[in-house]
Image 1 (cartoon, rainbow, N blue to C red):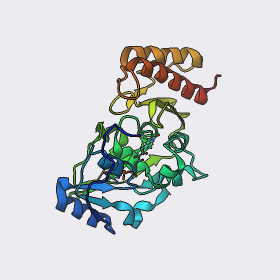
Image 2: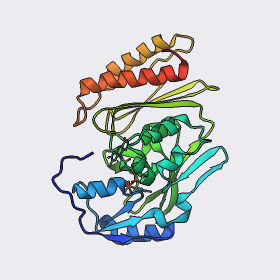
Image 3: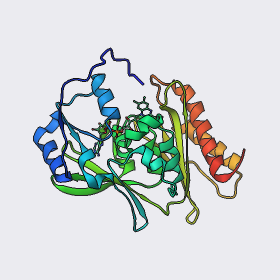
Image 4: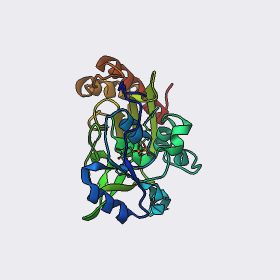
Length: 285
Ligand SMILES: Cc1cc2nc3c(=O)[nH]c(=O)nc-3n(C[C@H](O)[C@H](O)[C@H](O)COP(=O)(O)OP(=O)(O)OC[C@H]3O[C@@H](n4cnc5c(N)ncnc54)[C@H](O)[C@@H]3O)c2cc1C
């Protein structure tokens, strides 16, 4: 998708390929705001071509072996920063349905071959598919910088369009997702571009009966609802509960208007995708 800029060429930049996380952090510290991280390069190169972002130095993470790993340990699935969407899509034992459905719905197979889960998340534009799914699954991001490492929930990572709650010298080294989180699904609607006009990721924990609904593409960052904010009542019919969710959306969702959709149309689509997701999980035609 083009954002309408007349520019087509890539501006000049120096390409840096560190072999370790510490080397990557040193380069980011050294070049400050002139340097940006590159994972798959799909988003950053497109944005540089359109002059929506600039960088004199691109620090490519793909040469750091440990960032390419997918590991299961202590009930968590840890996905490194250079793991591609395609690799996750092809994992036959991936139990996290919302994640599988979200990554499989992104762009096309050629883009998914290069683009990474972490890159899609860090792009932080409102319409991307990975963040709503990751948030509904209770994922958190591992951050590394000169001062050390820390973890932040993905729900707190995206501050606004293109804005992350990490410092310029920091990188996300991976994302961890609890595997026992529950049953989940992801539904998106797109038209005329692969990007979502609205998306819904729903997760329910069968033991605690905790319900999480995360709406994507309706605001600068994903909107989170839980069973108390949507007044979900266990024991009521799915249809009646969906009407309750729609009522909450009427009162509180206030979807944005942008180049992909008006607010009014987005509200209709939001109700449609959330109903589809809830029926997928709880039954209903
Ligand atoms: C034609 C087209 C269609 C698309 N359709 C969809 C779609 O349907 N759904 C969707 O979700 N997306 C879509 N996208 C967006 C695409 O999926 C993203 O651009 C891509 O996933 C970004 O991942 P990447 O690995 O290429 O990241 P990069 O382009 O390398 O990086 C993206 C941004 O994240 C930052 N970054 C990357 N890794 C890190 C890190 N480890 N730590 C800190 N910052 C980091 C970079 O500095 C950059 O700002 C589409 C893109 C195109 C071109």
